[in-house]
Length: 92
Image (cartoon, rainbow, N blue to C red; front, side, top):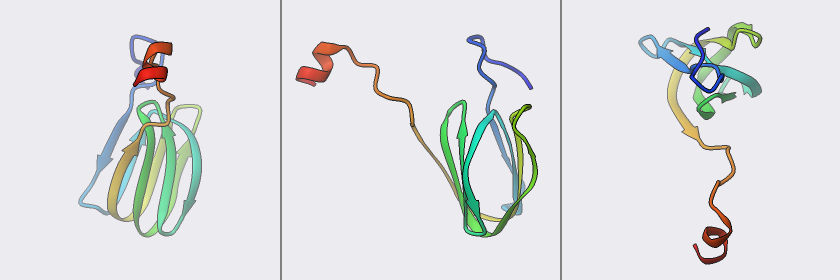
């Protein structure tokens, strides 16, 4: 697994004809069921939505997850807190 300059795991998402996904840079699996998978990655929280989803391979030490099933959507949300200064929090 490659690393970023700051020591974090590099993140990648590979979708193959919507029939599954291979994700690198996974730090934690928040939840999963047949309709959705929520992962914490080095680029934020990643949510995959689909049908008949299941985890085919999981190696958190290497940051590798393989999802099988039909993927209908993939989206990220930033889970990191805002890093604005005091002035930005008070007046922003």
